[in-house]
Image (tube, rainbow, N blue to C red; front, side, top):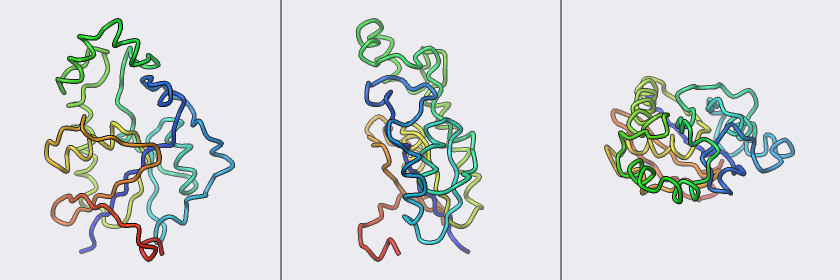
Length: 190
């Protein structure tokens, strides 16, 4: 039986990331149109390309292929009232509430989605992939990638995982999910 190979790719940088703001549905900071399809040869063969519904994930997916499939489970965490707000501003005006949210995965003081809810959503999506052999490349968000890794690593503190723009991590399912850190051997790119 062929294994499921899932490559999680973080969307490219946005102005919200640069300014340390909770995201809205903003575009990429880069000229993604000039770079369209520039990364389509990154993988052996042609993986099934999926992405979250937000503009930044759709634009990033266009670097890897055309017509990506939109998967709602890959949408960013719903930050509710904090959308567009700078983290520094919350540290000044609502430091205790922000700290509670950081410390308590079930907390959602912004009126949006808690980390527990996000992890449940992403975990349910990972479960659907267990019977989907082949390679899937998924363009999504740092919070979604952290949630997937928390599921695979069975409870690792997601706050300890940094996900940089355009970084990628690979998960494989063959009886259980395993984290795979691909090497940089030029042969791996063929």
